[in-house]
Length: 350
Ligand SMILES: NC(=O)c1ccc[n+]([C@@H]2O[C@H](COP(=O)([O-])OP(=O)(O)OC[C@H]3O[C@@H](n4cnc5c(N)ncnc54)[C@H](O)[C@@H]3O)[C@@H](O)[C@H]2O)c1
Image 1: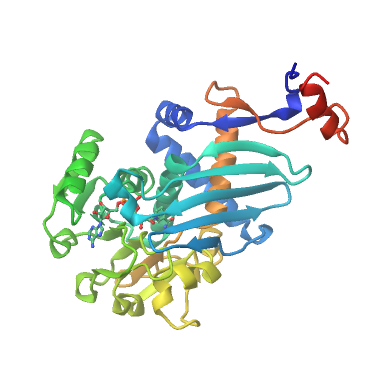
Image 2: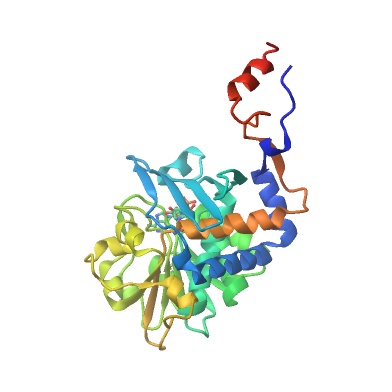
């Protein structure tokens, strides 16, 4: 008879269903605010982390990536894909899961879904950046690309920056209708627009959150007025960008981890030594965010492993004492650590 696993065999596992229970019980706004606090805390101790650009495996239709990082105590990684054409076949563009582990033993401490969590952490990071970079009196955000990430971005900008007025545009009107329905139900004032030119009118913040594996031009230079903050989410792979290069040349560019952003972000359109500023230094108070009213600020977001590490820490802390996780029998735990084979033999009754 196969013996019952011992206590050391179990790893907490958060399914999609449990993640949704955890987030809705906390409240989406409150959960995003908590995530942003974890991300800010880790950005303030940025030098403590092992950092590397994510390991990407590209194909014609998309990319599969591993995103590892560690501090002295914990190691974390996320598996994530990006397949813009998936949507047409009923699949998500982005799915993910991740692990937090103990550096001391190498044992996993948490295995969790990260599709919902990635949308939440991406939105929390964008809004955290905007808190330092967007005009302080911002009231209206234009959102180009109304797919899976869109509403999460809106929720984060309300929770962290107080934005309640949205202008929406997508090449697919069905996506805009979906986002309008969800966001009106959440209490936003929503205006739907028929073109990119119309959507940016009167917006102090422009979020681009489209998915297309090409050098796209979602925003042209004439669409970005002085003093605007651009939150560019969708250009996050080599050969996949959203902004005309001239916008970058007029902007102060803020990035997560330059060695990764220069390969994957809007910055791939610029010379290797084009000046960029690191967001963590702004959050840590080492350099200013927005300096004046006319400055165009650009958060060239690609998503970095430390944000996922923060999200994993946040979830590990949040599930403690709740029923929102299962115990997965993930690790072999023989009575004698060297007798792994004996454990296998005994399981067959030998
Ligand atoms: N920076 C990050 O940390 C981060 C994290 C997650 C996802 N992303 C990226 O964000 C993007 C959006 O992800 P998603 O899950 O919402 O994708 P999605 O496929 O659900 O939605 C993308 C939307 O963009 C629209 N679109 C495509 N081309 C357009 C155009 N030219 N103009 C207007 N709309 C257009 C599509 O119709 C679709 O509704 C993807 O590119 C993804 O890779 C970035």
